[in-house]
Image (cartoon, one colour):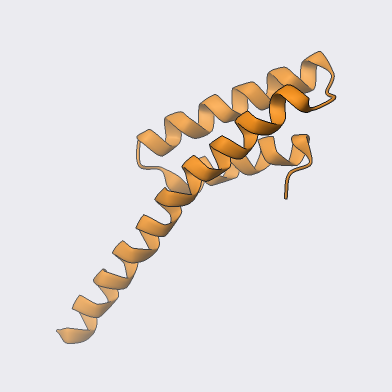
Length: 79
């Protein structure tokens, strides 16, 4: 029973860690986008992925949010 409680606690901590990263990624995208030299299509893609990432984050789908934000960061050349 103790193992299950520890496992559940670890999962909650891991989930919170993912949740906290999304806003940092969104800030990085927001800061880089105005300075980026992108085509109009690339800029539109970044904006779409950033919006999608925020919506997924708010819905509690942090893994999906991270994936969308990572794609946007990739287009911007952010590591």
